[in-house]
Image (cartoon, rainbow, N blue to C red; front, top):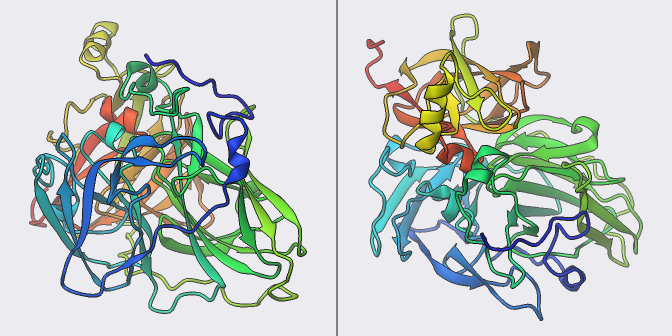
Length: 479
């Protein structure tokens, strides 16, 4: 293995201790709006990125259109999205449109919903933006490496009548495992990461850079769209004296509320939209800190107030987003299914099987299990087969020592209970964080036919077995 830069309380941001102070947070690469029948081209290829500011050198990455993150695709709700994916990598790839409801053939899962795009091949994705919200795109072929090398970008679907703010800002959060020479460590997919918490990096970026500051104005209101593009890192953002208000989770509107303990916790693949009113004075400085991992807290970025105030008081504009057209599950008539996640270090490896079976599965590279079975690849017998249009509750239990962000493709679900207690907001999500030993109940309508991935979005856990398929039958007469 390549020697790693040690992760320390002060060093987690970067591989060089001093350079972070040189870089202001610049805007995301110019947004791309869909305005014609011509598809947007996204070319996946090796490139270089300035993850660290000058005078440090460039890092070899894989990226879309030569940038990390890839271009922000920004459309209006109801628009037709057309993207021509061009594969210029030296291996097959796909693009998955995370969180946005697409037809099954457009979901971008290699060998399940499509053949992977071959080297020098192309594939056109085309679907309607049914829901407004914050989404993103990334590969679903060897995701533990392709995502980890930089292949991702934001997909923003604007509401027909957006809430009023002074700025709409996207932060794609990521971490990178970098060596002392500023390159990415090549130990992708190693068993140590897979058995534990996944690939945690030692360099954290916002929109592909290590920023020191972001300029704001007193009295300004910002809608901040947070997207966690990391393979495994969970972020817990503390905005200090500011009072962020959560208005959407995984792109879906939620009753505006303050986060628990004032901390925005966002697991891999998840998104949180917050509204922030900047209540400081001209010339003030306020740090945003990541406090999720004990004894590894660090300063992420500073908000620096300009010399003039934008306004003298907090605006009274509404923060309530219009709901998306989602089918509400019928809880009373819903069919219940038990889903148990097990495996990993310090966890229950399998359900009802002996040590011999466990060791046999581990020799095959299987470490994580859903209902006692590990996925050997995307094509497998479905974990569940659900009639089209029916309501279902998944009673999920995490019997492991590690958190898992569980993602269901093709659908959006309500989180209705945690450890037997009803949730306060019944939030719509597509990726739900489960703490170790926690039980979470989710409810949804199986209204999108096809075979859909259901997996942990810690990429190393998925690759090591924590993945299944949920089949929604087109013929509602089948069981």
